[in-house]
Length: 170
Ligand code: ADP
Image (tube, rainbow, N blue to C red):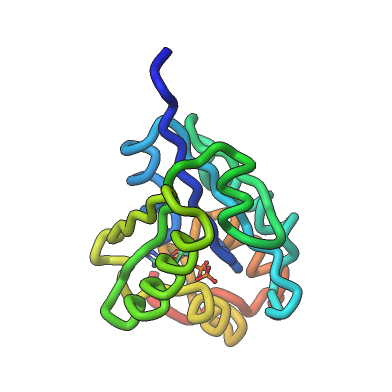
């Protein structure tokens, strides 16, 4: 039987953006299975609970049949072992991502030799996009349509009230 190629895509995803979705779709074309793993990190304050983030991601990736979603606490390498992933996917948007991602990749490989970390680049449309920026824009009533999946946009509206999404071009 052919060995299944499984990739783990870990992250905070607070919230999941169209940049994350772009990377997930690329991963789903490259691997037999992609597991999105929402990090539960008690030392970071998050807008959405891990369960809420998992729900939103599940909704957003429905059409990608070889993608599943879970949450995890602890080391990424342990999560990878648990789901049988030989590869970790991370994203590179700009040079500014490189140093942190490089450190993490080498640390993870040290913790689990044999694990490969692959970096994917999103469509250039999403290179400036990050979850922090999306939260700030939504918090102050800016429009996030087109930056996040519809389900995330709805949850941001609920979280920040009706004013969210009013300002910005149609
Ligand atoms: P973390 O806290 O683990 O960095 P994030 O949710 O911020 O979690 O990011 C998860 C991964 O997705 C990271 O590798 C990050 O570089 C990548 N990423 C974040 N935003 C984008 C985007 N707009 N396009 C492509 N990759 C992205």
